[in-house]
Length: 433
Image 1 (cartoon, rainbow, N blue to C red):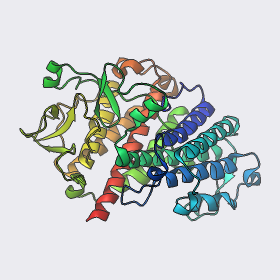
Image 2: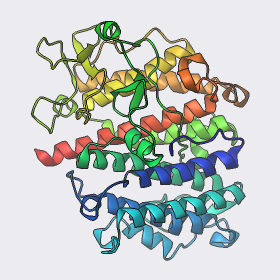
Image 3: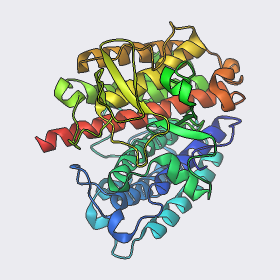
Image 4: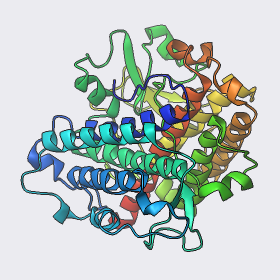
């Protein structure tokens, strides 16, 4: 499937492979839609898939490629001008950028062609070359230049956020989730034979009737397909502040999360109210969320949790999948993405979906998220590049032979992806009041 990249061999390979993968992943969100659907605006953000596709095409083709091409900025170290590409990227999130002739097929072809060019360019780029910071209001004024590797990583981060945004818009249009769309692109059956989908976008082994009663496979880390995406940092200064030393694989991976978490994701979660935490725009009782244990849930819905609050899931998952609240998505990230990996790889206290004490308030959920993020970062920082090259092990099931670097990149993609969804739902809540 498109989100499964080959195992990478070096830094150029890693940056090039994941840059192209994220652009193609956004293209997958357009698969099977008609001209009206790609222009539909199903959320309060005013964004649609056609606008997102054109925006990513322009920031990658008009911005990233222009910056990384030999001679960009004339090789200087002072602030540079990127006339044209910067203007294009700035105005790309505009409905006027979508042409009447644009279709899902034409935009998919456009994105895939851009992905090919970006991949080829990054593979041949001099990652040490300093590139002048373009004169644009969204770039820091006190920074003259940054290395080409930062530019490449920043572009991956930017496209990853837009790919997550595209996923939630697609879900709002017809309920199709990323795994199903990727299977369709590959001409594969969905769900795979012998598998079901216990939660948002993630596979898990099919459960028997007996195991459903007990919460099947609750002690095994959730089956998240190894794909991953690298991100960026606020240049070399952030690496120094985080105690990182040089452009190693570990450093790039940690910079990705540290920048996203401290500069974008965590600030977007600050001040979340309990009303937002439990916000259900569907309002018909069908959404999966975190709630006190109940006796009147639909048949097949499992209530995971050992405390006052429980989280909803089911084997097999209904089709279409239920809408999931911020509380549910945070529960998934805290437990399935982070806590169970911290147990499996870094010796953290036992945790799984059935034993977790889910938060009844937004404040408590964010405290749990902060704790698990801190454990994860501490664990990843303890691995050397040699450690990251080792297989991630039996805890990851069929991906046991994939490298720890693949695992880390994938977990960071999951965090960026799902927390971008949470931020979008906060925006939706603000506009529906």
